[in-house]
Length: 185
Length: 185
DNA sequence: GTCTATATCAAGATAGAC
DNA sequence: GTCTATCTTGATATAGAC
Image (cartoon, rainbow over the protein chains, first blue to last red):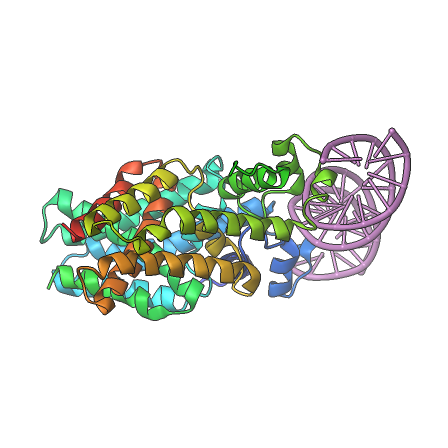
């Protein structure tokens, strides 16, 4: 199946980049249009509002994580150690090349608690991340402990992404993955 | 010495609350003025720009942490365990009652990398947090290990504040403090 | 599908009366 | 020190030509 390459997806991808670097409210429709080589009015041919782009952006990244990363936890015929290494490696590959950090983490801190449209998507993203990691860990720990460890490591990952981007230092971020792998050595 | 209670401080305190809950760019001068019982033009009697309020807000919170929390690490005549317990308790008291999370963490994710005015203040806040925690831990660990532990726990604290506010669950956040204290049991 | 043009509104900020 | 009033800019969004 060929890779889908619609203009709509292009807009979302450019929007994601800008949202991550400059934030949601500090990114204008004109900024997004510029990045796409369009004029701001033209964006409304694809999306009816900025909010719709924001939600699509969250869903797009979430979907990537579901398909490429979380799914590893539920695959048959792969060893626990192999699973966790691939899980960690794919997350690292993503965030080490993700200028501006984690879109959904950024939105979590920028968006008001009342914005349930965005917030529900963000919660689902993190819950599924925790669930997938807990699933892998549960092959060596009991369910309760696996879940607690997963939650801790997702939070730690988010904290280290914050620090990595604040200080421009990937080293500290990378220690998290190593520690997760070490749990299953 | 009586507690200083200028109107300028009131504005900063209201701004901090709004910035934490709704974000910096999503908070307008009119919002801040409303919260203060003023009209937006009146704010300019105290501050020349929104950016100035933003910076003052960051400095105000940073200063609170320096005076009330980080300073504990450098006090004479207090046991290591007593220090760490008070250090953790004061941080908990702050964030458990801080609607919208950590102002400087929020700004770290919302503000562009290029905004060095804000970013330098944020970096200083986190570096001094790490330094103070490392100082306490260095009474039981060697300097290198103490610094690594401190960095890890500051990052973890930020991640858990994110999750606490996202899910409305203080329980997970509270485990961080307990683990820091456990390091010195 | 992209453009020009524009409507509408809210933002940051300033001037000057009281 | 706070107000009314206003300026200017930039934001989201829409209508309609090409």
